[in-house]
Each structure stands twice: as structure tokens, then as C-alpha cells.
Image (cartoon, rainbow, N blue to C red; front, side, top):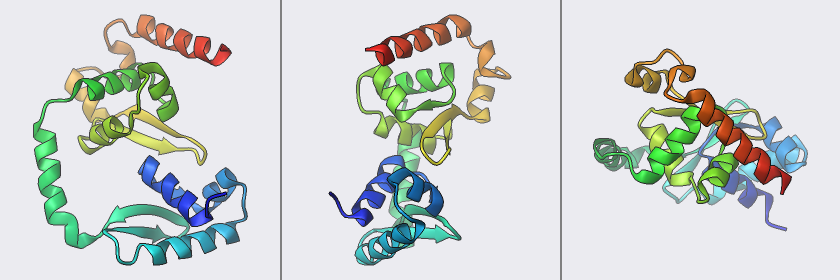
Length: 176
């Protein structure tokens, strides 16, 4: 079994989201005290790394150290100027037509890993993530809907039909 600090690190890294100690404890089926110990170990392990553990109250996340902000800002600006990749456009379409989709659902529909696309879409401000402690769900942002000229997703072309097809696909896959 992997070390708890490594498991916490993998969750924080893979989701790029913040978690409460209670949600991590529930997810990993350990005590909050064990999570605290794992976080302490993780923070120490990351001391000489470009990534650090950030904590506000009982909420934790991974972030890059401030000394790397200039180069990361340059990368973000370059990334924002590029057109969306085909993979990002497909990922965005799934989220727009199935608000609240999880990473697993998006990957199931697309058939490939969606981590990079989700990150790219979040950086551009096109999607936002919300965690319920167990899963992270993705939603289109108000800015995205405004750029499409719609008040809500239901005004998108063929919304009901496409939403139905996505639901049928997920139902079919869940039955297998």
C-alpha cells in the first residue's frame, strides 16, 4: 500500500483542486489525524521542490512557489493566445452539454485522458470545477456562456438531443 502522503499528493496533483482535511479523510477512509500526519510529511518532502503544499484553515492544495510566477505567467499568456486543441474542444463540448460531468465521465465519453484539456480550459476561464469532497465536477463558466451569446446551456444548439445522447452513452457504459 502506498504511503498516505504520496496518495494525498497524487490526489491534489491529479485533480488540481483544493480539499478539506475531512473530505480527504472520508475519501481515503482514514482519520483526520492521519491526514494531518500525511500533510505534514508531504509539506516536508516538498520543501526543496518547485511545488508546495498550501493550506488555509482545514483546506489544502498544491501550488507552485512564488519564485516561478514570472515564467508561469509567460506560459499562461502563450497558452491563452493559442487556439483550442481538438481534445480541449471535445472536452469543452462534453462539459457544455453535460454540466457537472466528472473527469471520469469525460474520459469515458472521449476515450482518452482529459487532464491536460481540463487544465487548459480552466486556465482560459472557460470551465470551473466544484468538489463535493468525493468527486470533482466541471461546469461551463458564465464567461463562456456569454461568449456564446446564451443565458444558459439549454439555449445551445441541439442541447436536449445532445444531452440525451450523452446520458444514453453513459447509461450504456455503466450497464456493461
